[in-house]
Image (cartoon, rainbow, N blue to C red; front, side, top):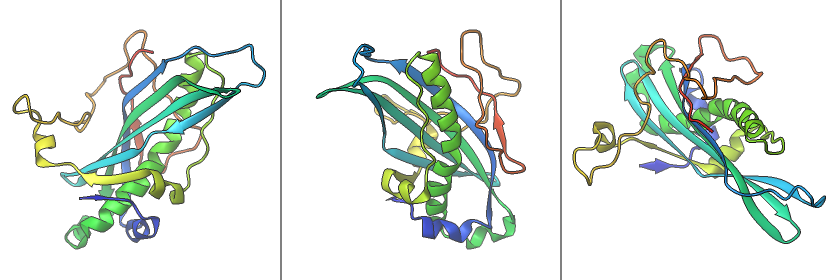
Length: 218
């Protein structure tokens, strides 16, 4: 079942759920076009990709995958050209404040909570990652706006991972296993030439940690 998250439904679990950890599974930025730096009328624009939040229950927690991506466009007079893109995949681990309430949780309410809060919790990290990645790509500065919950319901959907997706490929026709459902290996660190982990200026809530993770080369 796929639902479009409703902020009013998400608030019903606000006091029962807590973000335990956030991991960066994928971060990739690339230049895909040539910029016109000579035309003073040129302007930049960013376009977000649709967001499909995926989730699955795990032992004593819920694991959530939030893929975020933007295309970076340049407008010159009546021409529009894509000059770059940044995409990321974040894994968020949520837990119950009181494990005894688990039997009373509505899966539909849980999906609304995961859809809204998953995107809202990942977005500040994505803003920081986009800003840093655009600088590395030597594109003009880009700072994404703060995201409101009322916007999330317009651009995101949420669904539970299927058993086939969790099982992984059993044949050539089977779907691929979604990445990063397993926790990052202890002591992992970026290799030479890869981007390092960056954090936004906002402080995280107590008890929330962001794990270092491998990032793809630019």
